[in-house]
Length: 161
Length: 218
Image (cartoon, rainbow over all chains, first blue to last red; front, side, top):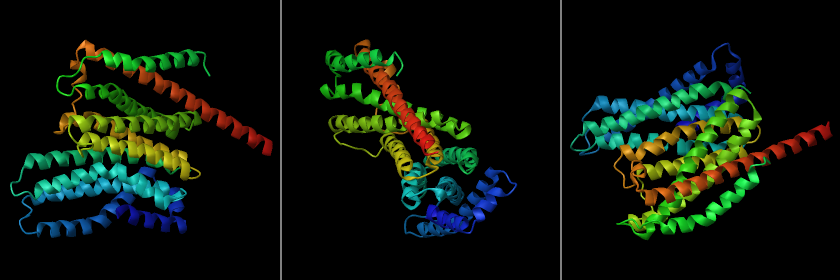
């Protein structure tokens, strides 16, 4: 969903030539990436919050650590959006982009999805084990740092041509 | 081709021919018996899979920031070898797992991360084939993400409860098992270098032919 929504946005930008205008702006390319990343994170935060609220409403699955849950939500969203934003921007000029986007995105984001799901599952357990939640969240944070760093590093050469 | 290529290819062929005999002479592992001997092909395949992913990532980074097509050609060659050796590791692993663990596949962290790493390299090749103009740079960006996955695959067995043996097993092997392993690792490494060299050479020849066609058209 984030990839598709980001992709739809970027396709519209490409058709209207606004992406070119954005790239011609006298701003560092990583700043453009950060702007787009924040945009998609903001877009995703609302359905994420709604999903978390619905999960907490399931009988016997009360959310016992809302701060940790909120942290996990942010980390998972950033990790997923970081890769989705870069790849959607990368593929905007590629042939067969509609087919290639999920093919590229799926294997890279699977670790983020797994870590997010396991952290959420641990949070919903009747006996809350904070150590397990922290472990998966530390992993999420590691992936976020790696993905955002790589995306910031490669955005400029990838969007130069 | 360089002068060393043919003698090295002959040595590699001989080493591959000898490897079944070297493995047959290794002692049986006490709990797994004969099936443990798959390990002598599985582990070198897995190591070459990780090494080729690193080579692909490093060469892609050099291409992305330097723009030299030679680096792109070697990254492409390494990506193909990542798929090849990854496939070998993913075939020999389940053959061993079926006997040792009782299941063909387990969704544990080492196996899942290896499969994801392999899928990234397949995605790289798909992008190169179907991405159209400019796919070389896009694939280079993807290869960097593939390389970032390598340390995770390697250390995963030490941090998660998994049925896959840990990385600490290899240094503790007795000489009778360590020697056949070193022999097969050397064989696979030589094979990897030769295939990489050959594949880069093929791409160089293609680039020369393309340049010739372009000059004729002009």
